Image (cartoon, rainbow, N blue to C red):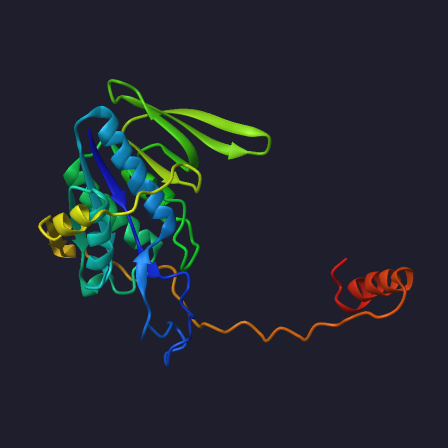
Length: 259
């Protein structure tokens, strides 16, 4: 069973993000880059599927500049068999649709039984690529899954996603696109053997022309980034508890307009 995992490289969650000289982008100086955490759940699930079935191939795919190879190496160190890097200046300003179209072109070449991705990337929180990818491919899609089980013949997959009070269960024919939610599994840490082995695994560079694509102008573009306004100073309400509670309610209602 062949599985493709679409991943994205994002700034580390501990990074102090600053707006760059160009207000349309962040300052990337000194940033530590990681695989988006939700994508790690997708990688882990793909690896578990392969291990459970005792055969198959897991391919990591990502779009972005040269630094994205670090993220792909991390996926290979976790256990992915090979990686594909969509690396072309033509995709420099790719929006979610252009990204989905590029991923779809690779997936059509690879013809996997299943595509896994994270529910959203933690940098822009768009959460759109998975569904757009499924639409471009014409495949069924289930988002934010908490459980999955592929049948013995790899013809269908049963997935569950959390709703209030329980799980919503769907049966989808394969091939399909699934996006992973936190709680689907616990991603493994790369072993030393895995890290060393990742250096020998293939990362294939792919250009837009290799896929027969000519990326169009993005339909969604960043116009400007702005820092959050400074948080106003806190206020301590003195006095008896009864009076303090009344003043707190008044302040929330009249001053803060919070209730």
